[in-house]
Image (cartoon, rainbow over all chains, first blue to last red; front, side, top):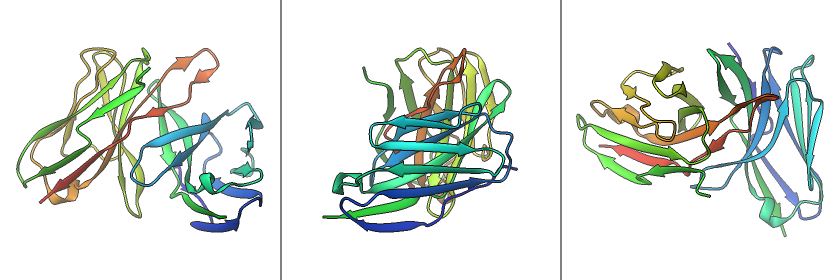
Length: 114
Length: 115
């Protein structure tokens, strides 16, 4: 059974500092990995999707890497801003009967202080 | 472009009542799924569908029913609500493209309280 862990559970940084968020998973036979952002009381917003054949994806200030052999993914957010304050969720995708089941980590709650 | 729309946003039920959570997507996605989010448990898959007329159980299906009569809609039914079903429910959709599944898009959630 796939298990996904995100450490730390909470992180506080001053504005301008780079953020490094970690995600680890137990089964390396993944289909894809997706990073989400969740604001309090809101839904999940997709940030980056990495297919299993890829090593990284970039979008603006965001960069996510994937190392299947070690069961790790890292989300980097450059030059953090107060608007980056949110909970970040990592989800590992696996194939189930032609569907894509996402197994989620517990999230990292980020606070960027002005 | 609405994406994934869930209704209602909030609901309070009494134990034993039934209700249907609605989910609709306008992206022509074949794959749709329902998750529940609970403190300390993360998001867990309840049911999923790979296309109209095809559904299957996820990790925590007990107490819930689904059906998929159209590509756009994937309602979740609570048969007899229990306090343990107090949670935030999210519907998601994605598309199995040639390069693999696209990113999953989530609705804004339905916050359900069972008293």
